[in-house]
Length: 393
Image 1 (cartoon, rainbow, N blue to C red):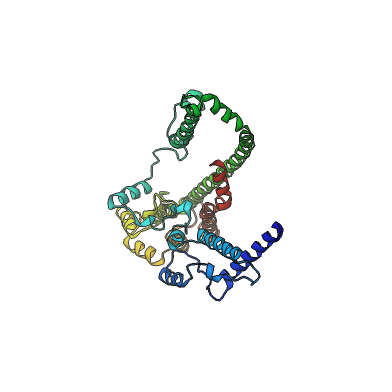
Image 2 (image 1 turned 90 degrees about the vertical axis):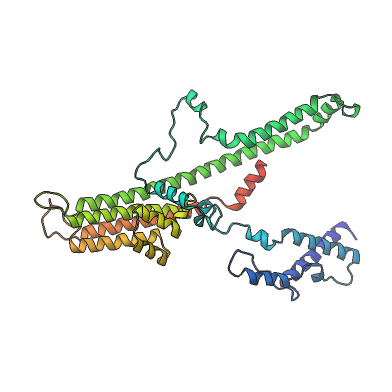
């Protein structure tokens, strides 16, 4: 039998074995393992599945026994390599890594003191530092920086590891040793590795290109998320501006009426609460604020009331529910006159224009903040990230 016929034979037997392993009556389709409420049922299904794929192989009578047994062993070992155990499959990320770090229970962790600290930071109205670290475009100042720099990210691991490997190679080529490890022989060994150097030079250019492209794409994702966050802030500012401009005032003094002032305070509280709960849904730092204990901490700080907490937990909508509260508040305030024509305008002007403007801002706000989780969940395809990791390693 020629080598080409042997290769075709092995391919045919392998395809037959795989066909029987997936579609044969002896082996039911293996369920897809995921962390779910049906895990016990999946475990029972896995216990009924044959442990070995060898029994599923069938070959014609004219196939030599040694070839059939060898192919069966190869298919069986390959199946065990690619097969996921329940523990391995459960360890795979089933949530948005960029939002919760792959930890579904991140919002349920945190002591009472930690919740108080997080709630205080989230409800603060003063910024201790800019969101984006600022810098002086000066050589001496930039070289002295450590926190938040690339040097801090790569120095402890990549730089030290590569330095250790380079020193080990240098010691191997220069240090004295036994006769069979004479330095001259080691230098000859190094010269014989010159073809690998050419491969490395070709591969290094490819790695440099892939890393540069990956870095540009990662920066684009970061910039898009940052721009969307700033647009969310802008829409919230628009709501505050419209409410402050059209709140009812006393014609004699020009001050807000007591009803209008109370409405403005409620709008401001809802805007802050929406901001807190939204970023709690897309970050791991503030995720515990969505738990009942986190909402209690916000109640202590006056960010919401006990009745509002019950409504949030009942609806499970969090920041989306707060957006509905704002919409209802705008409608009722415009309807009863708390938000309407300014003292500088004639009485009797239709409030429909203001109502439409406020609702349009809410719709723009919803479409803007909804894009942030979408951008975080679609950062990079897994295949591309794996390729970059393989090339760099």
